[in-house]
Length: 166
Image (cartoon, rainbow, N blue to C red):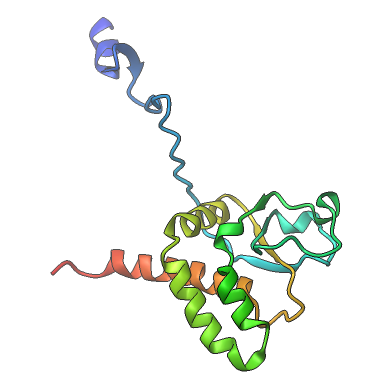
């Protein structure tokens, strides 16, 4: 009986623990590994009413939406750094003729911000995430490009894992 108990336990950082126990996390090691299926990101205008079906609401504009109080907007996070740079935002000016160029330039900016893309990807594994934006045009805004990039990252990551090693 004693030998069996000894086999079922392993020595981890000076303390006997059962083998099936979760590993101890060192203080300061706060990396979160989200598990579960990735859900589709939802998009919602800041001026639309918040609902329980939105899940976690993340504001993805650099500027706070005009005329909205913090209580009325009801966002969980404000990720200013994931928004287009001020220069790109001013250049675009929501002119439909510049949409394709804006989307390409914004994708290039997002390629340099993998930490924020990874954060949004982990959040959507935990539950429903709604990207909140303030633009009037629902088809051509930064949140649309951001959703495409995040969902595209998943696809390329899965393809890279399934690709045969050379």
